[in-house]
Amino acid sequence: MRLAPNIILIGFMGSGKSAVGRALAGRLRWRHRDTDTEIESEAGCTIADLFLAEGEAAFRQRETAILARLLTGLETEPTILSTGGGTPLQPESATLLKRMGTVIWLQASSEVIWVRVGPNLASRPLLAAYQDNPQARIESLLTARAPLYAAVADFALDTSIYARPMEAADQILSLLNR
Ligand code: S3P
Figure 1 (tube, rainbow, N blue to C red):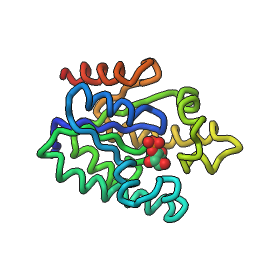
Figure 2: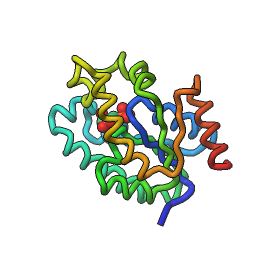
Figure 3: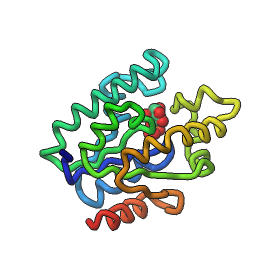
Figure 4: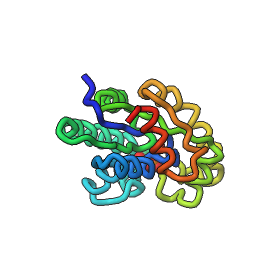
């Protein structure tokens, strides 16, 4: 069973999940949650430090645990949830995302993603380890992940064409007729 009317944003790093999530929450006056922020405050360190200390598999388990915890609160308060770029990778997390509400896959071309994440590679451990050719890494991760995003999403929206997050948020609201 799905806990409507929550809106769940998925998509690659730099696709706009956090910024569009904040804009949507502002428009609807709903609360906004961000799995990366929840994980950082629970762990008491940055995602980059967490990857160093515990590795990716442990990080994915933390994501699943956060989603399971958030799910219990979604019945009482409509929520916009911004996820991490790899959240749907874990099958258990993908199942939880689908139960939470309407899932919107935010898309952007690899060129646009590079422009957005390039200046802050250090905060993104899955790219920072590929300093010699991060753009090729973006391409290969995008290709590998596209089917996983597609399997979870109810709608997809290319954010590359919007100059500001609020424009993408308004487009999502018209897609959802809200
Ligand atoms: C990740 C994306 C990051 C963060 C972590 C792993 C990924 O979130 O969860 O570094 O696997 O793509 P953003 O998409 O918000 O950058």
